[in-house]
Length: 102
Image 1: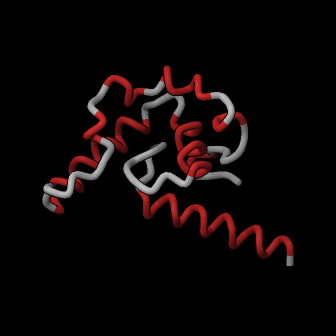
Image 2: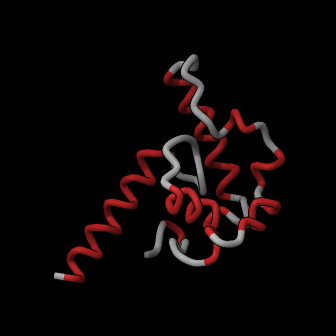
């Protein structure tokens, strides 16, 4: 399966967590990537846009996304995608897999 920008959604990310040491998010507060129920819709949109911008420049964003999907992460921005975006990616992948096996 290939995600946006050619990210591969299989491979070593689940087995080898060393990629986390190279992640750009390690330089930032975790609050940038996780939902705060006290924030307004506009604050959330701004925070998520900043997080996604950081992810776009991260050298391990594909491994991060792969990890989040692999473990079924249900919160936050991972690999540049929010929860709904990851769920849509999974549905699209499953739909393509279903068509291939039919």
